[in-house]
Length: 330
Image (cartoon, rainbow, N blue to C red; front, side):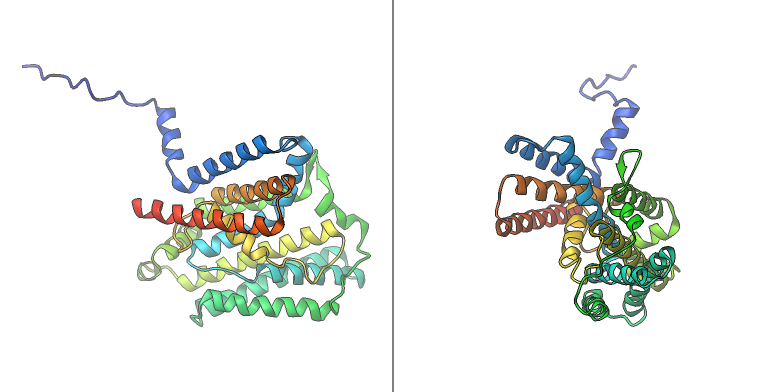
């Protein structure tokens, strides 16, 4: 006897539609993107020139430095840690490279030394976190002061000027109409995406943030990958420092103050769980863009800088709340 057909069952969605729905259903990508669209809609409705090409390029250029730092911060937070030293490492690497170039060191060597110093600070952070078992927030708070002090000591508190003219390319140059800082940002994000999403070290970084002890018991050398995470954070901070120095054509020992907070904000607004183990490098890029759009739009609206800090703080708290509750539902 033929069984009755349940006419209430909806037909299966076509494969492309189902794939799109699954992609949008991932909290780490969907919610930040929805938030970015909402912020953009508000800015379009309340400002006159938000969608002008010049303004959009300006937003992308302003976002680039914070986004580069946020890549390393994403790795640190996903692994269950944090890095408060990135702004100070930016200042140290930028002033050191600038000083070496002015002193006659070949520019290529000066840049490599600056990058190496950034990595060295990251490795130092990773050593104390991974092998000395010290809390990341305490370690990086200490190195934040050390790096800033070294930058001020090296420069005597004064900016370093008279850099080679060609060095300006990294901060203001362009390739095929796309500005160099934006290209640098996209390259850093592409490399980070491949690392986190398509390599074993990336999977281990997520696993460490999700359950460090279980990851250790499964045979993963946790300390080694924590060291890698902080080395990446130091490296991206150094890249950002060189880009900023090139844009200003000056090594500023006070550069990067508060940049670590903007990087953390971009990561959290991008859907990464502040407790680690969950997040997306794509979400971090969206979060950095959202923060840049918010800063740009509020400035165009003439909002007081003091009020801007309050608004951004409320949005960050809301992002953390949504992230935590989405994680519990998941």
